[in-house]
Image 1 (cartoon, one colour):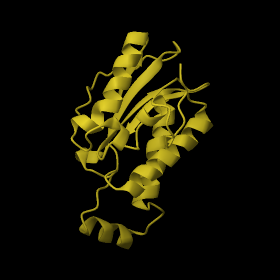
Image 2 (cartoon, rainbow, N blue to C red; image 1 turned 90 degrees about the horizontal axis):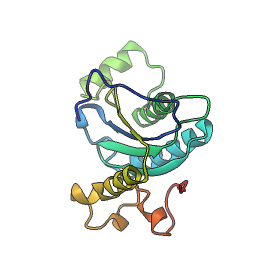
Image 3 (cartoon, helix red, strand yellow; image 1 turned 180 degrees about the vertical axis):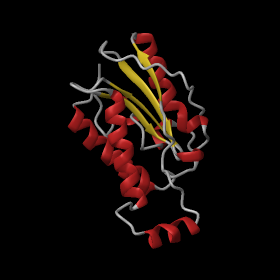
Length: 173
């Protein structure tokens, strides 16, 4: 997904935000169960730190969709930045490395980045838009032919809306 250069973010209205961000060059860095589970755990931690209401989510192999509230005393951009940094550092094993280790890592063709730099943010200000975005989030694994029904993709908020155990609890509106 190409992000527009003139993307305007509107905050401070207490809207929900439909947020999409992708892995660097659309690589499938979240393809493994382990990596998706790490990302889910970190989202839960960032949610608690920023006091976000989490209304919907899906973790796909190469991107993430979230439906969140604005953090109290902060912006969605700050929460997303912390999330992306923590996931990237943990999954890439990024600690302080000397130049020799870095050159070895890049000779093995490991990417310099985990995430694309920008993200898409759309304000959700009506019940109709809320339903539309939740349906889109929950249908994404089916649309991408990863599963035949949303119930079969545990890295989504679908289970919570179906009254079943989910990896993250949902803040129902």
